[in-house]
Image (cartoon, rainbow, N blue to C red):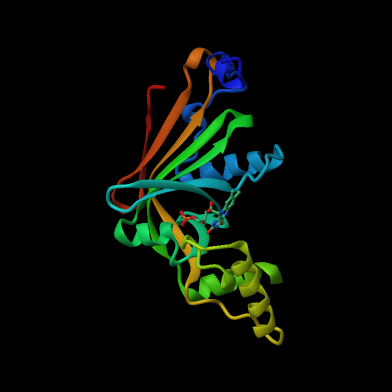
Length: 216
Ligand SMILES: Cc1cc2nc3c(=O)[nH]c(=O)nc-3n(C[C@H](O)[C@H](O)[C@H](O)COP(=O)(O)O)c2cc1C
């Protein structure tokens, strides 16, 4: 078995970029996230706003990448098809997790939260800002359903392009955003000898947060 997989056991890196200190942390996870997010952008990471969203239908977990499109103290917003697998999962159980894999910075951020639909007005504001092709694309695909061929997709694309030749492309009723309202947010920074720094913000009553250090 002389393949790349054979050498996986030897694939490891020492993490030594920097530490994360308790007294350097912001009081709330949204401010701390903004600092790290800005650094991820400044470091020119590929898709710094890509995050892995995990959901469960009550028994089966599933994960996929989505793009973070807004965040503030209320939470993390992404957009999707409201009839997709992930949206059906969220309807069954709103608990989700988010993972930002910022490996070149030797960092990850993990969020546990509850996903809630944002208002159609908020979704529309974002939808209207998307490129023409993306707006039509939202109308074309019944996301997560089984289809027989790519040809079908292309036919639907042509049909929707004809349909929306003139005027505004309306917001599909089956498309919009979710806000993940965080309950816990963990910031992970790689350190030497696997003695990594991990700090977890946990929401307490009244909008306050406590911060605890976790063993690596
Ligand atoms: C980098 C990247 C970004 C993506 N961004 C989104 C997104 O913002 N919204 C979305 O619905 N799907 C996005 N996708 C596609 C999803 O990963 C997924 O295939 C799709 O949403 C269907 O997921 P589901 O069947 O589990 O609901 C993205 C995929 C990649 C690789």
